[in-house]
Image (cartoon, rainbow, N blue to C red; front, side):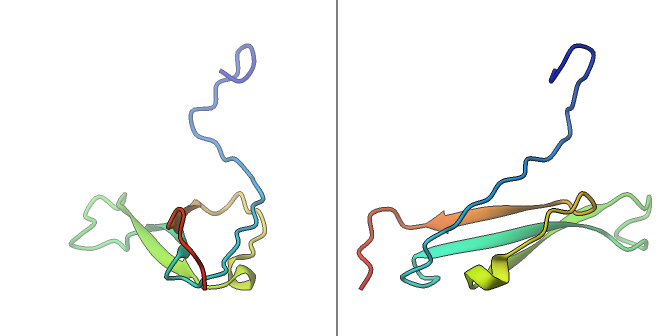
Length: 86
C-alpha cells in the first residue's frame, strides 16, 4: 500500500546513476533488458507471450535514456569487486 486505499503492485522506479566504466567491459557491464511481445504464431497461440531481449550497453553515451512510461525495461549492472584497473 502506498497510501490509504491506494495499492500499486506494478510500478516503476526512476533513478539516475553514473557508473565508472574505467577498465572496459571486461570489468564492468550494464545490460539493458527489454520486455517484448512475441509475434502471434505457433509459439504464441494465445497471443499473450512475452520474452526478454538483452543488449550490452558499451558506453555511458550509449546508455543514456529518457524516462518513458511506454517501455518495460530494466538494467543489470555486472562488475568485478575489488579489481585493479591498469
